[in-house]
Image 1 (cartoon, rainbow over the protein chains, first blue to last red):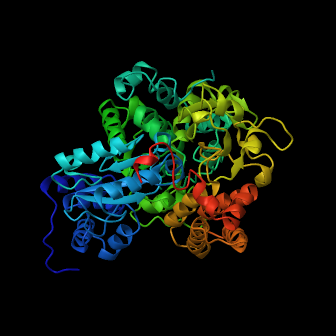
Image 2 (cartoon, helix red, strand yellow):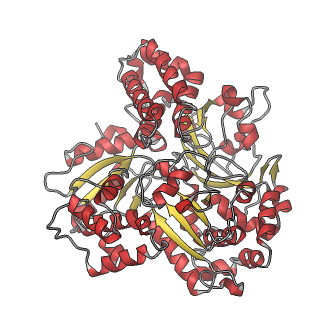
Image 3 (cartoon, chains in turn yellow, blue):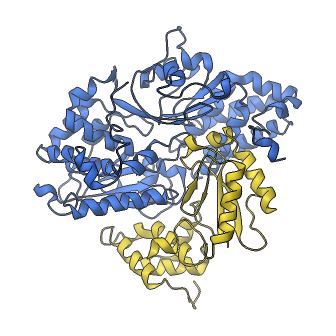
Length: 180
Length: 448
């Protein structure tokens, strides 16, 4: 663990973390780990550095390794920096049947990156993800909290345009909005 | 029109809110349940014949009756809202539109099981649904439907919603429990079963969202009445989430027993195959269950119509049958590449394998690679046999059913569509001509 751990939650985030911890019985505070990692990701720029994970460990009074092994298991946690907008396109069977490959290719071409990469200006990261329970409204993608469904290429254009125009801070699944 | 027990009021404006939900009979089931003995509620659920709606189909009442009740040890009801099985989106639909039905079911179930604190474990990606549930829980607390002495019954009940972070495996009940304890979602070896040692080593029941919701009408109407709906041991109604190449994708509540052909072609349900195409194949119960070609999904081997029931869908075993599973009903038209669809499923299972058991961790990866090789035009006939061999060495050799879930789609695709694999191997140029491989639909021309 780094000796100089400068990261800290905002007061709002800390209050939320305390409320979350109280949902579990005395001594079982580790159960709040996943929710707290979502908060940490929102607080610390859309990804989990080892400092961020160490900080969460200190909040829960568990060892850092207990946090690392969990953060590395779940696909929603980014262990490397990501763009401000993370575009997650579902590419599992039901979405593929209705054209998700085309959606991925179109966004790759539009942003000049491949799936898994981030644009040079740090604005967008494109990811392919597995089934998001939106098969009846396929193809679909998720940005932050929002499900964008029944996608067409022109819808994708509009969504990306909207992101460029409005997004200032990182849009992670949990955002500052959830924390206040 | 079949009876609607869960979706009757789904389109009532404002049904998300407590007030409107109560105006339509909401929490009457809980009120009735709190006047019954817990054992009597378990008995009604047993009599209803309700089977786990998450996919396994295990009788819910029986699961409840296995719960250990040692003195002084808290026990828990945990709702599995980790809906992640490809093709399945019914729980999301219900939680989003009528969250109080889930809360009412959780309160009834927890009272019946003697659980004073229960949890709803929802997949992390469904953050917006998490907020909907949280808001509904807050409303229920404010109205005295949750918390101390609910509805003046003397029963104290706390309900919390908990979010995951992206892991299909956490839909397996012991992995879900591990995850709820703040750990990696590695399934536990059973026994001990969760009913004896579950969450924090305490007796625990894990039930799917739809199962929990179904308890509400069961208590209201009585188990015997519920059991009158359906066919044989497939009682009640089931939510089917239909997707793929159909005219009307969506969530349908059916009385178990509707003929598959009617479900696919009737305007009441899927409305037939889109763009005037013909049906090729169906994955009837979520990506894990065997794919069946048109002839076998519509009719049993003996020529009788196949019905939407647990028994009829599995008739003939895996040679000619499949499973009702989660009710994730994926329809493919005549232009679909079964091999490419299988590749996406296999990639999914490889991605989602927790890695504990070698046959699953390694086998899913090799199956994905071989399918990729075949689709890349470099496959051999031996590769098809090798795929068969690998899937047979995963099935039954893992701690949890993800092994079977990964093996069955491969086995069934080869069993029923071997000629398509062989065509891709012998004539690679046939691969690209398939319009569901590189080119999908009419938006494709804009992509190139």
